[in-house]
Image (cartoon, rainbow, N blue to C red; front, side, top):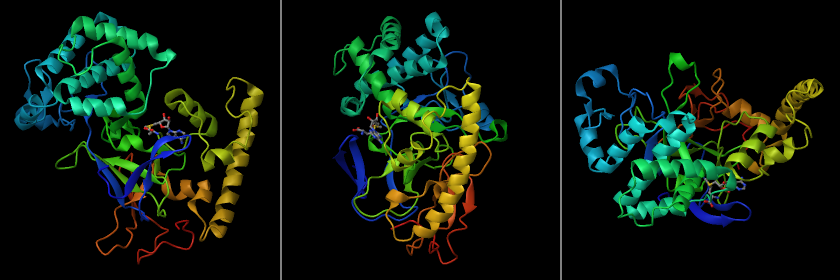
Length: 405
Ligand SMILES: C[S@@+](CC[C@H](N)C(=O)[O-])C[C@H]1O[C@@H](n2cnc3c(N)ncnc32)[C@H](O)[C@@H]1O
């Protein structure tokens, strides 16, 4: 583990997880992690290059006209330096040819959803990793994730495509097989982190993903619907290691506590969170927030077409909002000195959810100042917005409603 703050351990019912080896302060960076592989999130077909094929920085109009470079198969890089670095690592002749062949002569892929085109990109990157760095490929294989029956058809299709168009060279450290392809796709499904496209006026706060990465240490963060940490990326702004992800504490936690991220925006309701966690990650969430919300309604979102239920849901939502307001007030009043297991979630939304329209990002303070005092600037991990934390006074001491222990 590259972070002195975190210890990897087995947690009952959750597999491996990351636990703090010391008390942590809001804003503290607990992990910086570099990807072992990266691949574009853009469809293979008919996509002009918007991002560098190596570092995934946005190709500015000036860089695409003057300083950008292309490889022999017309993959675009932001500079000659990036192209040279890629040719020596992430963009081997096999990978370059494989992507081009898939792009140019795979009529089958044209008929497939974009998701499968992106999975094809992942497989090419994963088999390239096997050739280029067998030890990192073994790390990829050691991550959580096993194929299940619902993914078999996709694995078969993608495996036959890769093997007919661009079979990986015979020097792979493990035999090339359908089972291996299916296992790799399962690792990707559970462990890939998305690097977001830049926030711009075109997407009015809603950003999609520009690239996916597999991060060998960050992959051990388990999920919580009210996370105590969140992750940031600075693809366009970091001067180097720009595809690293940075995980920062949202609020203080004591030693020995598990550090969790939310696997998706925290605004989703109970039913949709449970559905997503089961379908995409294969588990039922029993976090504190889910335990509370499980009692709010037995029927929530069971059947969106049923008018009675819709009306019932609306009434319940109003009730929930009222409950949350009351909760917020009561729990903020009674929260002093308690553990973060009873962290009131209404309070979480008010303090740690970005209020920009359609953003739903999570806010974490900037890292503590050099003298150790907390920063009162909160950063959104989706839109990047910075805002003053009203609940931290000028001295950097958190106010009396803080839940931090
Ligand atoms: C990215 S991995 C996290 C690390 C994983 N626990 C491991 O052992 O490598 C995601 C998987 O961890 C497990 N997991 C994550 N959060 C969980 C939670 N809150 N409860 C139960 N299992 C969880 C699920 O199996 C999920 O598919």
